[in-house]
Image (cartoon, rainbow, N blue to C red; front, side, top):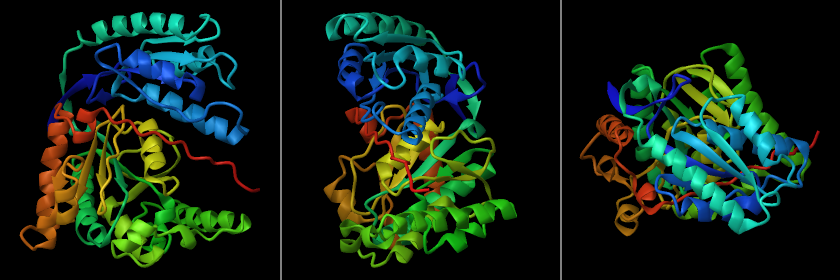
Length: 386
Protein backbone atom coordinates (compact mmCIF):
# COMPACT_ATOMS: atom_id res chain seq x y z
CA UNK A 1 0.00 0.00 0.00
CA UNK A 2 1.30 3.45 -0.93
CA UNK A 3 0.39 7.13 -0.62
CA UNK A 4 1.52 10.39 -2.22
CA UNK A 5 3.69 12.27 0.25
CA UNK A 6 6.63 14.65 0.64
CA UNK A 7 10.00 12.97 0.88
CA UNK A 8 12.36 14.68 3.34
CA UNK A 9 16.15 14.69 3.21
CA UNK A 10 16.31 12.53 6.34
CA UNK A 11 14.40 9.78 4.52
CA UNK A 12 11.08 10.30 6.26
CA UNK A 13 7.85 11.13 4.43
CA UNK A 14 5.41 13.91 5.32
CA UNK A 15 1.74 13.94 4.45
CA UNK A 16 1.56 17.74 4.70
CA UNK A 17 4.02 20.48 3.66
CA UNK A 18 3.62 23.18 6.30
CA UNK A 19 5.69 26.23 7.09
CA UNK A 20 5.72 26.21 10.90
CA UNK A 21 5.79 29.53 12.77
CA UNK A 22 7.21 28.38 16.09
CA UNK A 23 7.35 30.39 19.34
CA UNK A 24 10.10 29.77 21.86
CA UNK A 25 7.80 30.74 24.71
CA UNK A 26 4.32 31.98 25.55
CA UNK A 27 5.43 35.60 25.10
CA UNK A 28 5.98 35.06 21.36
CA UNK A 29 2.86 33.02 20.63
CA UNK A 30 0.67 35.91 19.50
CA UNK A 31 3.33 37.20 17.14
CA UNK A 32 3.50 33.72 15.62
CA UNK A 33 -0.29 33.65 15.21
CA UNK A 34 -0.31 37.00 13.38
CA UNK A 35 2.61 35.97 11.16
CA UNK A 36 1.03 32.65 10.14
CA UNK A 37 -2.22 34.42 9.29
CA UNK A 38 -0.45 36.40 6.56
CA UNK A 39 1.23 33.49 4.77
CA UNK A 40 -0.57 30.81 2.79
CA UNK A 41 0.71 27.40 3.81
CA UNK A 42 1.91 28.56 7.23
CA UNK A 43 0.66 27.20 10.55
CA UNK A 44 1.40 28.29 14.09
CA UNK A 45 1.08 26.94 17.59
CA UNK A 46 0.20 28.71 20.83
CA UNK A 47 2.76 27.65 23.42
CA UNK A 48 1.89 28.00 27.10
CA UNK A 49 5.35 27.63 28.60
CA UNK A 50 9.04 28.02 27.64
CA UNK A 51 10.34 30.13 30.51
CA UNK A 52 10.53 30.46 34.32
CA UNK A 53 10.38 26.72 34.92
CA UNK A 54 12.34 23.93 36.58
CA UNK A 55 14.92 22.02 34.55
CA UNK A 56 12.80 18.91 33.93
CA UNK A 57 9.90 20.93 32.54
CA UNK A 58 12.23 23.07 30.43
CA UNK A 59 13.78 19.93 28.96
CA UNK A 60 10.35 18.57 27.98
CA UNK A 61 9.32 21.91 26.47
CA UNK A 62 12.47 21.95 24.35
CA UNK A 63 11.91 18.37 23.27
CA UNK A 64 8.40 19.26 22.15
CA UNK A 65 9.46 22.40 20.27
CA UNK A 66 12.30 20.63 18.46
CA UNK A 67 10.02 17.65 17.80
CA UNK A 68 7.42 19.90 16.19
CA UNK A 69 10.09 21.44 13.97
CA UNK A 70 11.45 18.04 12.95
CA UNK A 71 8.04 16.53 12.23
CA UNK A 72 7.99 15.25 8.64
CA UNK A 73 4.84 17.28 7.91
CA UNK A 74 6.92 20.48 8.24
CA UNK A 75 8.92 21.84 5.29
CA UNK A 76 10.58 24.74 7.11
CA UNK A 77 10.45 26.70 10.35
CA UNK A 78 10.35 30.38 11.31
CA UNK A 79 11.15 30.80 15.00
CA UNK A 80 9.97 33.83 16.94
CA UNK A 81 11.28 34.36 20.45
CA UNK A 82 11.19 37.18 22.96
CA UNK A 83 14.89 37.26 23.82
CA UNK A 84 15.06 36.75 27.58
CA UNK A 85 13.43 33.32 27.83
CA UNK A 86 15.18 30.21 29.17
CA UNK A 87 16.17 28.96 25.70
CA UNK A 88 16.12 31.90 23.24
CA UNK A 89 15.50 31.71 19.52
CA UNK A 90 19.12 31.28 18.35
CA UNK A 91 19.74 28.40 20.75
CA UNK A 92 16.48 26.73 19.71
CA UNK A 93 17.58 27.08 16.08
CA UNK A 94 20.84 25.32 16.96
CA UNK A 95 18.93 22.48 18.62
CA UNK A 96 16.72 22.04 15.57
CA UNK A 97 19.66 22.23 13.14
CA UNK A 98 21.44 19.49 15.09
CA UNK A 99 18.53 17.19 14.25
CA UNK A 100 17.42 18.21 10.74
CA UNK A 101 18.65 20.01 7.63
CA UNK A 102 15.35 21.74 6.82
CA UNK A 103 15.39 25.57 6.60
CA UNK A 104 15.08 27.35 9.97
CA UNK A 105 15.10 31.14 10.42
CA UNK A 106 14.96 32.77 13.92
CA UNK A 107 13.86 36.21 15.09
CA UNK A 108 13.82 37.85 18.54
CA UNK A 109 11.24 40.48 19.43
CA UNK A 110 13.59 42.36 21.73
CA UNK A 111 16.40 42.31 19.15
CA UNK A 112 14.13 43.47 16.33
CA UNK A 113 12.83 46.40 18.43
CA UNK A 114 9.27 45.22 18.88
CA UNK A 115 6.43 43.14 17.57
CA UNK A 116 5.67 44.91 14.29
CA UNK A 117 9.25 44.80 13.01
CA UNK A 118 9.56 41.18 14.04
CA UNK A 119 6.35 40.19 12.29
CA UNK A 120 7.37 42.03 9.13
CA UNK A 121 10.65 40.11 8.89
CA UNK A 122 9.05 36.81 9.90
CA UNK A 123 6.35 37.17 7.24
CA UNK A 124 8.97 37.77 4.54
CA UNK A 125 10.97 34.74 5.64
CA UNK A 126 7.85 32.54 5.80
CA UNK A 127 6.71 33.69 2.33
CA UNK A 128 10.11 32.76 0.87
CA UNK A 129 9.87 29.30 2.46
CA UNK A 130 6.28 28.84 1.26
CA UNK A 131 7.36 29.65 -2.30
CA UNK A 132 10.07 26.98 -2.10
CA UNK A 133 7.75 24.45 -0.46
CA UNK A 134 5.26 24.85 -3.29
CA UNK A 135 7.94 23.63 -5.71
CA UNK A 136 8.34 20.28 -3.95
CA UNK A 137 6.41 17.56 -5.81
CA UNK A 138 4.65 14.69 -4.10
CA UNK A 139 6.20 11.25 -4.47
CA UNK A 140 4.89 7.74 -3.98
CA UNK A 141 5.70 6.62 -0.45
CA UNK A 142 5.19 3.24 1.15
CA UNK A 143 2.64 3.04 3.96
CA UNK A 144 5.52 1.93 6.20
CA UNK A 145 6.47 5.64 6.31
CA UNK A 146 3.34 6.37 8.33
CA UNK A 147 3.59 6.92 12.09
CA UNK A 148 0.04 7.09 13.45
CA UNK A 149 -0.80 8.46 16.89
CA UNK A 150 -3.76 6.80 18.61
CA UNK A 151 -5.77 8.82 21.12
CA UNK A 152 -9.08 8.76 22.97
CA UNK A 153 -10.89 11.48 24.85
CA UNK A 154 -14.37 12.11 26.19
CA UNK A 155 -14.87 8.35 26.30
CA UNK A 156 -18.15 6.61 27.03
CA UNK A 157 -19.38 3.02 27.07
CA UNK A 158 -19.37 2.83 23.26
CA UNK A 159 -15.65 3.66 23.13
CA UNK A 160 -14.40 0.47 24.72
CA UNK A 161 -16.83 -1.89 23.03
CA UNK A 162 -16.83 -0.48 19.49
CA UNK A 163 -14.71 2.55 18.49
CA UNK A 164 -11.51 1.47 20.28
CA UNK A 165 -11.61 -2.13 18.97
CA UNK A 166 -12.08 -0.78 15.42
CA UNK A 167 -9.08 1.52 15.82
CA UNK A 168 -7.13 -1.34 17.38
CA UNK A 169 -7.88 -3.38 14.27
CA UNK A 170 -6.65 -0.46 12.16
CA UNK A 171 -3.43 -0.42 14.20
CA UNK A 172 -2.92 -4.15 13.60
CA UNK A 173 -3.45 -3.71 9.86
CA UNK A 174 -0.95 -0.85 9.68
CA UNK A 175 1.66 -2.72 11.70
CA UNK A 176 1.22 -5.74 9.44
CA UNK A 177 1.89 -3.45 6.45
CA UNK A 178 5.12 -2.18 8.03
CA UNK A 179 3.80 1.10 9.49
CA UNK A 180 4.04 2.14 13.15
CA UNK A 181 1.50 3.30 15.71
CA UNK A 182 1.82 4.97 19.11
CA UNK A 183 -0.69 4.63 21.96
CA UNK A 184 -0.21 6.87 24.99
CA UNK A 185 -2.01 8.06 28.19
CA UNK A 186 -0.35 5.67 30.63
CA UNK A 187 -2.60 6.65 33.54
CA UNK A 188 -5.40 5.05 31.53
CA UNK A 189 -3.58 1.71 31.42
CA UNK A 190 -3.94 1.37 35.21
CA UNK A 191 -6.18 -1.57 36.01
CA UNK A 192 -5.49 -3.10 32.63
CA UNK A 193 -1.70 -2.79 32.57
CA UNK A 194 -1.22 -6.54 33.16
CA UNK A 195 -3.21 -7.23 29.97
CA UNK A 196 -1.33 -4.59 27.99
CA UNK A 197 2.01 -5.92 29.26
CA UNK A 198 1.23 -9.38 27.88
CA UNK A 199 1.68 -7.87 24.40
CA UNK A 200 5.28 -6.90 25.17
CA UNK A 201 7.84 -8.21 22.69
CA UNK A 202 10.43 -8.67 25.47
CA UNK A 203 10.43 -9.18 29.25
CA UNK A 204 12.06 -5.75 29.61
CA UNK A 205 9.16 -4.05 27.82
CA UNK A 206 6.67 -6.06 29.91
CA UNK A 207 8.30 -4.90 33.14
CA UNK A 208 8.56 -1.29 31.93
CA UNK A 209 4.80 -1.10 31.31
CA UNK A 210 4.04 -2.43 34.80
CA UNK A 211 6.64 -0.12 36.35
CA UNK A 212 5.22 2.99 34.63
CA UNK A 213 1.79 2.43 36.14
CA UNK A 214 3.16 1.65 39.60
CA UNK A 215 5.38 4.72 39.52
CA UNK A 216 2.49 6.95 38.45
CA UNK A 217 0.28 5.87 41.35
CA UNK A 218 3.16 6.17 43.85
CA UNK A 219 4.00 9.66 42.60
CA UNK A 220 0.42 10.84 43.09
CA UNK A 221 0.22 9.22 46.52
CA UNK A 222 3.31 11.20 47.61
CA UNK A 223 1.44 14.34 46.61
CA UNK A 224 -1.58 13.21 48.62
CA UNK A 225 -3.60 12.42 45.51
CA UNK A 226 -5.41 9.36 44.21
CA UNK A 227 -5.56 8.98 40.42
CA UNK A 228 -8.77 7.02 40.83
CA UNK A 229 -10.42 10.13 42.26
CA UNK A 230 -9.94 12.05 39.00
CA UNK A 231 -10.58 9.14 36.67
CA UNK A 232 -13.03 8.46 35.19
CA UNK A 233 -13.95 12.10 34.53
CA UNK A 234 -17.51 13.35 35.13
CA UNK A 235 -18.15 13.07 31.39
CA UNK A 236 -16.90 9.48 31.36
CA UNK A 237 -19.25 8.61 34.21
CA UNK A 238 -22.20 10.27 32.50
CA UNK A 239 -21.34 8.15 29.46
CA UNK A 240 -21.54 4.91 31.43
CA UNK A 241 -17.98 4.31 32.71
CA UNK A 242 -17.94 3.61 36.43
CA UNK A 243 -14.31 2.88 37.36
CA UNK A 244 -10.76 3.53 36.19
CA UNK A 245 -10.32 -0.20 35.60
CA UNK A 246 -13.33 -0.23 33.30
CA UNK A 247 -12.07 2.81 31.43
CA UNK A 248 -8.59 1.30 31.09
CA UNK A 249 -9.87 -2.01 29.73
CA UNK A 250 -11.58 -0.08 26.94
CA UNK A 251 -8.67 2.33 26.46
CA UNK A 252 -6.03 -0.30 25.74
CA UNK A 253 -8.21 -1.91 23.05
CA UNK A 254 -7.37 0.94 20.66
CA UNK A 255 -3.72 -0.15 20.62
CA UNK A 256 -4.52 -3.41 18.86
CA UNK A 257 -3.05 -6.83 19.53
CA UNK A 258 0.39 -6.80 17.91
CA UNK A 259 3.58 -7.13 20.01
CA UNK A 260 4.69 -3.89 21.65
CA UNK A 261 8.22 -3.22 20.42
CA UNK A 262 9.10 -0.05 22.34
CA UNK A 263 8.11 2.07 25.34
CA UNK A 264 8.81 5.80 24.90
CA UNK A 265 9.04 8.73 27.26
CA UNK A 266 7.04 11.81 26.29
CA UNK A 267 7.92 13.35 22.90
CA UNK A 268 10.79 10.91 22.22
CA UNK A 269 11.09 9.73 18.61
CA UNK A 270 10.72 5.95 18.12
CA UNK A 271 13.73 3.83 17.24
CA UNK A 272 11.63 0.78 16.29
CA UNK A 273 8.89 -0.01 13.77
CA UNK A 274 5.63 -1.55 14.92
CA UNK A 275 3.24 -1.12 17.84
CA UNK A 276 4.65 1.40 20.34
CA UNK A 277 3.40 2.89 23.61
CA UNK A 278 4.31 6.24 25.18
CA UNK A 279 4.27 7.24 28.85
CA UNK A 280 2.16 10.41 28.93
CA UNK A 281 -0.44 12.06 31.12
CA UNK A 282 -4.12 11.23 30.72
CA UNK A 283 -5.01 14.67 29.34
CA UNK A 284 -5.75 14.01 25.69
CA UNK A 285 -4.42 17.29 24.26
CA UNK A 286 -1.04 17.01 26.02
CA UNK A 287 -0.89 13.37 24.93
CA UNK A 288 -1.48 14.30 21.27
CA UNK A 289 1.10 17.09 21.64
CA UNK A 290 3.72 14.58 22.83
CA UNK A 291 2.98 12.12 20.01
CA UNK A 292 3.19 14.82 17.33
CA UNK A 293 6.52 15.94 18.78
CA UNK A 294 7.66 12.32 18.56
CA UNK A 295 7.06 12.39 14.82
CA UNK A 296 3.50 11.16 14.29
CA UNK A 297 2.31 12.50 10.94
CA UNK A 298 -1.37 11.73 11.63
CA UNK A 299 -3.56 11.04 14.68
CA UNK A 300 -6.78 9.07 15.02
CA UNK A 301 -8.91 10.12 18.00
CA UNK A 302 -11.83 8.09 19.36
CA UNK A 303 -14.51 9.82 21.41
CA UNK A 304 -17.85 8.89 22.88
CA UNK A 305 -18.94 12.23 24.30
CA UNK A 306 -17.47 14.31 21.45
CA UNK A 307 -14.51 16.67 21.00
CA UNK A 308 -13.43 19.40 18.54
CA UNK A 309 -9.70 18.71 19.03
CA UNK A 310 -7.26 19.37 16.19
CA UNK A 311 -3.54 19.96 15.72
CA UNK A 312 -1.83 22.51 13.49
CA UNK A 313 0.92 20.17 12.30
CA UNK A 314 -0.90 16.88 11.75
CA UNK A 315 -4.43 15.91 10.72
CA UNK A 316 -6.55 14.58 13.59
CA UNK A 317 -9.25 12.13 12.46
CA UNK A 318 -12.03 11.89 15.04
CA UNK A 319 -14.31 8.85 15.22
CA UNK A 320 -17.19 7.83 17.47
CA UNK A 321 -19.41 4.79 17.88
CA UNK A 322 -22.12 6.82 19.60
CA UNK A 323 -24.78 7.65 17.00
CA UNK A 324 -26.27 10.42 19.14
CA UNK A 325 -22.87 12.07 19.59
CA UNK A 326 -22.15 11.92 15.86
CA UNK A 327 -25.52 13.47 15.05
CA UNK A 328 -25.06 16.26 17.58
CA UNK A 329 -21.39 16.96 16.70
CA UNK A 330 -21.16 16.04 13.04
CA UNK A 331 -19.35 19.32 12.33
CA UNK A 332 -16.47 18.05 14.50
CA UNK A 333 -16.44 14.26 14.20
CA UNK A 334 -15.28 12.71 10.93
CA UNK A 335 -16.56 9.13 11.08
CA UNK A 336 -19.59 7.38 12.58
CA UNK A 337 -18.81 3.84 13.78
CA UNK A 338 -22.19 3.24 15.41
CA UNK A 339 -22.83 0.54 12.80
CA UNK A 340 -20.81 -1.71 15.13
CA UNK A 341 -23.18 -1.03 18.04
CA UNK A 342 -26.21 -1.78 15.86
CA UNK A 343 -24.67 -5.01 14.60
CA UNK A 344 -24.60 -3.85 10.97
CA UNK A 345 -20.81 -4.14 10.69
CA UNK A 346 -18.05 -5.84 12.63
CA UNK A 347 -15.22 -3.87 14.19
CA UNK A 348 -12.90 -5.69 11.77
CA UNK A 349 -14.86 -4.38 8.78
CA UNK A 350 -14.71 -0.88 10.22
CA UNK A 351 -10.97 -1.29 10.81
CA UNK A 352 -10.51 -1.99 7.12
CA UNK A 353 -12.59 1.05 6.20
CA UNK A 354 -10.51 3.20 8.55
CA UNK A 355 -7.36 2.00 6.78
CA UNK A 356 -8.68 3.37 3.48
CA UNK A 357 -9.71 6.61 5.18
CA UNK A 358 -6.24 7.06 6.67
CA UNK A 359 -4.73 6.46 3.24
CA UNK A 360 -7.00 9.16 1.78
CA UNK A 361 -5.82 11.56 4.49
CA UNK A 362 -2.20 10.72 3.69
CA UNK A 363 -3.00 11.58 0.08
CA UNK A 364 -4.30 15.02 1.08
CA UNK A 365 -7.90 14.67 2.22
CA UNK A 366 -8.45 17.10 5.08
CA UNK A 367 -10.08 16.26 8.40
CA UNK A 368 -12.77 18.53 9.81
CA UNK A 369 -10.42 19.98 12.41
CA UNK A 370 -7.93 20.78 9.64
CA UNK A 371 -10.54 22.60 7.59
CA UNK A 372 -11.35 24.77 10.61
CA UNK A 373 -7.67 25.42 11.31
CA UNK A 374 -7.91 24.09 14.85
CA UNK A 375 -4.68 23.90 16.85
CA UNK A 376 -4.79 22.47 20.37
CA UNK A 377 -1.46 22.32 22.21
CA UNK A 378 -0.76 21.51 25.86
CA UNK A 379 2.54 20.66 27.53
CA UNK A 380 2.51 18.32 30.51
CA UNK A 381 4.48 19.33 33.60
CA UNK A 382 6.86 16.53 34.51
CA UNK A 383 8.52 17.86 37.68
CA UNK A 384 8.01 15.09 40.21
CA UNK A 385 8.85 14.21 43.78
CA UNK A 386 12.11 12.32 44.27
